[in-house]
Amino acid sequence: MITIPYLTALTTYFSYGLLFAFGQFRDFFRKIFDWWHASNLQGYAPICLGLEDFYIRRLYLRIQDCFGRPIASAPDAWFDVVERFSNDNNKTLKRTDKISRCLNLGAYNYLGFAASDEYCTPRVIDSLNRFSASTCSARVDGGTTTVHKELEECVANFVGKPAAIVFGMGYVTNSAILPVLIGKGGLIISDSLNHNSIVNGARGSGATIRVFQHNTPPHLEKVLREQIAEGQPRTHRPWKKIIVVVEGIYSMEGELCKLPEIVAICRKYKAYVYLDEAHSIGAVGKTGRGVCELLGVDTADVDIMMGTFTKSFGSCGGYIAGSKELIQYLKYACPAHLYATSISPPAAQQIISAIRVILGEDGSSRGAQKLARIRENSNFFRSELQKMGFEVLGDNDSPVMPIMLYNPAKIPAFSRECLKQNVAVVTVAFPATPLLLARARICISASHTKEDLLKALEVISQVGDWVGIKYFPAEPKKHQQQGKDAIKLE
Image 1 (cartoon, helix red, strand yellow):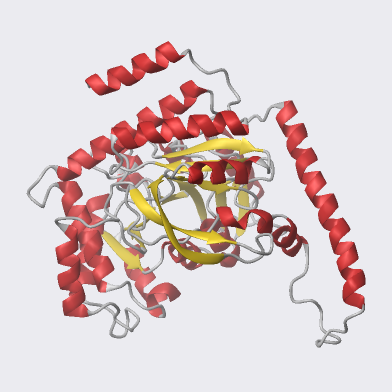
Image 2 (tube, rainbow, N blue to C red; image 1 turned 120 degrees about the vertical axis):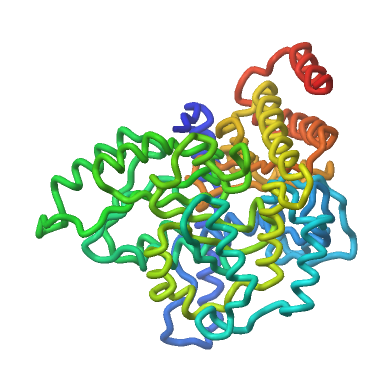
């Protein structure tokens, strides 16, 4: 739970209030001027209406240059960012021919597979030549190749489950699977900070949804006990099915799920466990097998394991792993399997090759080295940021580390100043986070060298001083220097 300082909360509310008031003031005059110009759609309701439209026009557009920056290279440790300009106060942005070579602290390239790889890339090219870029067909028609079958077997073995099914998009994996697993008369108990794909999937299922406090097993048990006692709304009949949905690493908090405690509670109350490992599979654990391996949880105790290939494996798509009966049922019932075009064969080959490197099946130790490097890089970078006085969320070993910004004016200031010094960061604000809890989300990669990390720390420290986001006292520089020297000696 984030405890925002009183003064920070007060100034943040004041800033948003000021933006809201001026936005409403401008909209008032806009209505007056628009009254003089008759609309071509007489009698139609405005197609864009409500607070969302107001937020986009009066708040987001002011700082949209901080988002959606086009890149002109592979998302490696360093990449080329295309420069843009605006002549209308950021309402529209135009690309230039200039590029800036920037340190990449925003991509999910946890193990460095997003760039050209000596083992993966040649096999991906061979797959492209053999199968083409797309199957142009759904899996149940002509969209299942030998690569898809090999990928599903490879994923099942890697995560420790009897079977797996793969999809072409990670977001759809959650949003399309949950409505197939549960429906009316069922109960979904979801962590309060679960990803939007889980939220939309739960809403689309028709099941009753209850939320427990983020990563708080005692509150989960309380909710489970109350819901089992009350039963279904109105009828009070027993629930047909109960599924508890959690994430391995929470993407906006960088926190590890308290999986052992949650699994124990679910077993006690006979509820199914649905684990989203989008950010943890491949990135944590001794052999990259995710939070189950890291926290010592038997994968047999997790009923449905979900993950994506867009982070640690440098590809696209997602998977569901579970029992053979579950996977066979999904192949007959899931719309994402029945109607969507199957994952691109070269993308599937990239995943297979990446897993082989991680497991050392390529005949080298590069996989083990990547896993050790991302763990060292993540823990070093998090520790140094905390020593500087930043408020950093998350746990050790997590490659995701949010730096709290809070105030809306600090969002563009931090992003733009970092970019000026060739460090590309991702800033996140409402609606992706609660209104008061804007942050910069740093993603560390195994491809980052120590020199890269030291440069990033230097820039972030300078910008943090200018912007005023060091909310805690910094350690004396002598201690910080001793820590850096110790790292170099190791």
